[in-house]
Image (cartoon, rainbow, N blue to C red; front, side, top):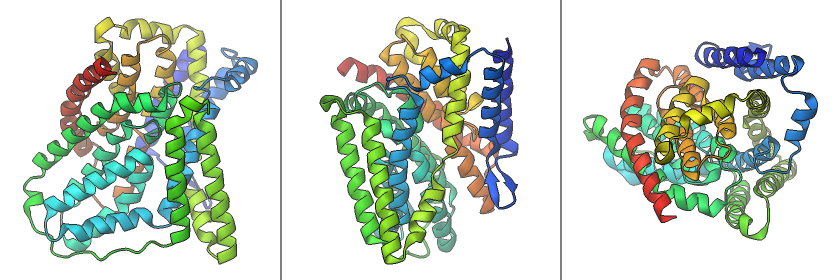
Length: 429
């Protein structure tokens, strides 16, 4: 009973934190309290004995693909490579190329931005792309005296739909589909990801058709890459790691080894190269930008869900959601809603236990819900929380009501497309 009560309090507190107290400053240190709440909840549950330290230790050292330590290694390894690629100025360079190709047409600029973000998200991470491109979009739109909202919403929608295509696109994908073959996952999710992303593209074009009809008053010059050697090494390892991840299932190589190895090598290069060339600032800034708080948060939520699973709660949820041929629909809807009640990472940890013994369709539907759910409210994903905070700091009005208004339009159109294309994809593969 204690575990259930504490779990409810933790979930409610996390939502309250992300909405009202996203960050606390203690001296020069800034702390996001949402993960502290989760850790405290996990500690209380362990103290009351609904899960013992021995049981928890056994789960954390289990040689399974869904071991949270392996998942964190996979996530942080790929994130580190993406962050250093950004620190080197590669993403800003690509954005400036898109701007230079647009001429004076906003429609052309919108297309270039949307598809650039979509492609980058597939091979990096939705969080990194959102945090990287948002300041650039705001700066350019102000200098060009155009409405930034079509581009910001397009950025957020592209990053949270095309992120479904590869396992590495979102930490929720990694958690839910860690046991799945990399290429098989991509084959099944390609159609839902592309069709859902394109649905959002057309919805946004329709919603902002008048705004996008006006001409751009100024053009942008190319932004040079800040550090070419660091960009080259980071991009090379991103390509190598993606290729190794693709074949890992066929050569008996666990994915977390690949990602962690790539992340460590790129970090060492950034540090050594930075010391030798006097450019250590890139390594320092990059390491600070890594979302390290995800580690205690994920481990705490894993502890809470493990305790709930031991009480049979996850089995009861599974019995409710199991609807035979309609399981794709029930899991898609419940995961989308759950992401906005719990945030998509805690929801994915919970559903990871619920999905034990469920169909592949249910698993893929949950992955889709964990990505699309981020579009509905700012609570749906950590990226949404960070994104809205960035907009506030830049004095861009985009409150919860406006977020939900556009979110309902996007999610309302995207969910039916996602369900239909997932059914079709599973028939093929």
